[in-house]
Length: 433
Image (cartoon, rainbow, N blue to C red; front, side):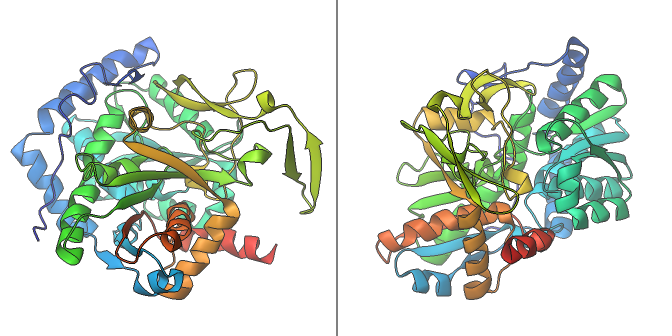
């Protein structure tokens, strides 16, 4: 098996010259940022095929990040479920503990080549913040990370890690005080400092060319996984499963299999307390004929409320944080408050390429609830000795649902996008509750 890693250029027509995936994507930013984005596009188009840039990036992936990441057959979990065989793409074993380093390092190298010395970023679960702070420390760049104070509280170890690495972490008190609001503050900073600052967006979203760049840098996951599963299992998987917040880990592994029509691509969103409660982050989910919801109170007890179906948060097409995409909105068309036990999935929008893949039928999207993700978290710990991130646990939960219904020779390939060290406090609190 080849272990070479490289930046994938992807399908020649996606996105088009305007950054559109079908009708999604594009650039919707303040006028002051348009020339800044033009500079980023020009620099990236020049460097993506530059042998020197590619060699530097690939060398760091191999000698610093720890690529290729392994592919693990989850034999005991598969045997316990009694159906399909589950394989795990181990992005949790990379330096910093998640797939985020692939994109952060690539964009940090781009920023340095552009002469930018100040880097800003947003983070939810903290893994993109840690990856960005790591890349900046490695390359000698100033680093400022925006993070909602709610996420700072539930991801305290990652906040400490970012500061250890020399980053300034700025808590965001506005809105829901989570990822959406951290993105807003980072954009405000960028508007105020357009000439000396580079914004490393952490997922496959935002204005063009960010969804393209993030997909390219993360596509190494799918390329490796495709070669590895052919070597280990002798054939392609039947299904590829990944969690979807903004969507970077999912688009990264999906891209290795887009041209394989026999391989189903499954994205798993955050179902939160359940779609019927309205407290979730599942942009693609739909509620049919619902007239009530169950809402959990602070003391853990349930209370029933009557509610019209139209009042539930729904994913609708809109312009959000620089892109046209599907956004979770309330009945008045305002951005809905989201909820997930996993900070990295607690986001109202989704990357535009995922919406396009959904629309053309190439990928399907489902959800896992908080309780299902926690159960999957514990199952992977128990049967495989692997502590997964709560984000990744949503993808594991979907595999656990599907495996018992499938033949023994069926293969489910799950992208284990990150490790769970950062989530231990959250899991301990949830378990005690």
